[in-house]
Length: 225
Image (cartoon, rainbow, N blue to C red; front, side, top):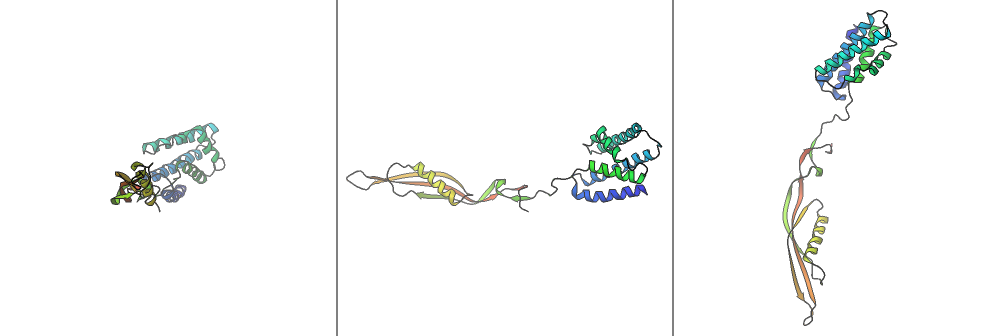
């Protein structure tokens, strides 16, 4: 009957574990089964040992916890070697102070204590989604074309390179998600005050534009819900 109570409690905890804890379903089941068995062994030994000394009681607990750690490791469930340390044995021993004469209460107490220790809460169990977002990088663009614009006539002190740089800034302002590259530049001039020398210049720049980015599809924690 006591064993049944432990198993029933294990079943309830396993339901919670399946959605709340980091271990796989198989590992959670194995961990809970071995935990219930260890609770049986610890409390059964205590109940049938008569008047035990503190040293013997502590030794029994430590031996069973060492056995539990080994059985977990044999199943590939690692990282629980510290349950057999003297400090944790002391925790289990103090938990049992009020229930040593009640085997059922003892087993439930040990089972609860070990379950709390062995099952680690998940920080985030939600699956990572796949999506196309800017941080994934660009896969391709919806449109590609050349743009040619001129600076208009103006006096000296300017240059084709400066006009191309200014045009690139203008295009980036018009299309923040676009990609632009210079493919050509040209300069013309005329005299507007013959026979005097009053030169005017016009600068032309051709830019290759890629707009309408299509982002790479990847798994990312930044994907919208």
